[in-house]
Length: 220
Image (cartoon, rainbow, N blue to C red; front, side, top):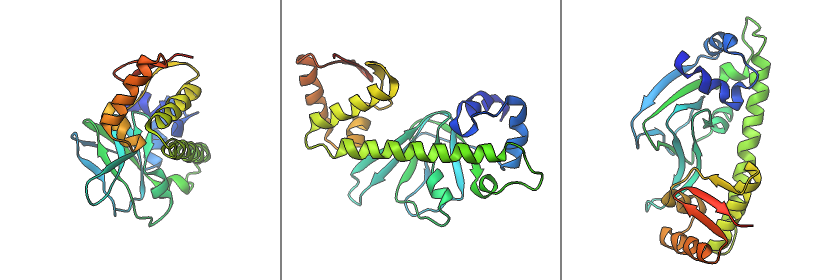
């Protein structure tokens, strides 16, 4: 696990924890490491989980699919980011999403009961982890609210502009990389890829944006 300490400490969940303290804390929290190949399911709709996942390498997608196979990307987790935290905290909650490996991925699982209940040894930093977890859950809730705002727009262009505007405000700059491929962005915004590509092309011709692959420049 030590080879991933820098990634773990970069996570909001472990904010304020020194590298010297990390080994003891991970042992206290019952941390376990597991690796998965690309496209593998880490969790499926209908599962329950008692563990918070934290991506150590690679990336995972949190997706919803209907019975006809239409896919909606709910979120993406890259190294240092968590997944399934809300489901783990809501004991017995059944997942209505699946988690898949976008790339070969290594994740760390933390038993939520050991996170939420202070250990017998009175770990001095246990309360900090709980506080950080509340911050993680709050941030995810805010990002999900943003996604609903994007999807609630009436046109494909409005959805694109809503998403890019939110990313620019969040990052504090007009040139940035987005975490999605074209198909993934279409799935995230719930639009057809062809319509997304056509609208991006129109916005470029009109001088609203420049882009190359997943790098965008907003011309303000």
